[in-house]
Length: 594
Image (cartoon, rainbow, N blue to C red; front, side, top):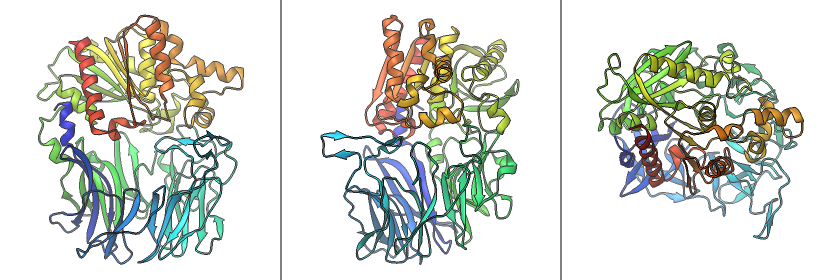
């Protein structure tokens, strides 16, 4: 597998099941004539070939009767009858539609941006008065999104200097998540608005609500951490009204989009499995090493985008009985030799190894090795490798993916073991893993790579160690003091997680203590900095501070900035940029490790 093979990749990105359970609609990303397209497919849940409904779509939703399907195309809502009639557009919002939901067979609830902005007046100036004026994945939040009803006419139901998200409908009530309070103390909750415009707050959970759905009776099932000001390791919990449904598990729940939050995905020991909270049953057996990306239910039929057995790309499955309905990612993977994978434990640290195809890990010696570090820190590598691991293994590298302290796959205590001591226990675990692999003779020359917090840890490791021949830091943190305000959520996250603040001496001191830039003069490892130009989570200013300092110190460094790309550019940047990024990574490693 080579970077150019990303052009033949297939990836399922969204699904919904018809009300009678007979069909599942799924969106598949693929390249057609050199362009990425997101085609909408209709697949029988009893088995059978898929039917292409349209060549470009997202966010599909069946009508209440199941006779039509709506979707977003060109940022507007379109409806297509399933009997083969033509599609028609039902919205024409100037700034497009953010989300929608069926109200009945002829009307929609729609989240759409205002025409007027509290921030900007023409092109003269932007006046900022709120902390939430930008958000990763959304960019500058210049125009608040509000609830509208679209039928024969368009009626707006909400207004104000705030943004609504996560639109849901129950009867004639429209639910959404919003924070109507002071932006300096964010606390998003579920609100409801009636068709006559009566607005009420629906939830009063202690923690901020991330997602929710309605039950058949109109109860709210929400995903939220258990405390008002959560640290990174307060497990996201599923709540039925005010009753916690997953707190006893000591694991993060609600880790994938679903049409019913009672059908949830729980992360445990590198497995991300589907669980039905109504019955207490696992829907994807953990012994099959599942990684579930999305869930949907209709007519008693549950379908999922899921991979099993360490496969790097998912397929479409019906879960009860477990049946593959449509191959997708496996089609792409089948064209390339499979890497060798192994899961090991090193001094309590779970480690996933991905080696070149045909490697005998019991006898191999001196493999050029890349330490791959996940983001977060409250995240964890799943058993399934990502495309980076596949490409690196195919190029002859041993890829080491450790779930170090701070990862969220083994409960609160494992995450709390890191706490605010970034660069302490996490870095120690990295060295422990590498010491074991080098002393056993399996690992040879070493490099490290990471994105986001993983980029932070790369920057930290090369400033406190000389054991790496090369390093690649993508969208990584370098200066925690400036990042406090430069990051879209830094002013809240840093305080809640105990990293520090910028208005007390102690806060600034700790932020600087855990800043890789503090150690920049010690860096001698050749460093490749990859950065999304539109990243609001770890913005370019962080990478630029590292780049400028290393250039002034005459160290080997290269800074690559990708236009129109955000924090998740590995997965969602334009195809040619994803290919270019992978090629540069391999070139950098080959240059310094071969």
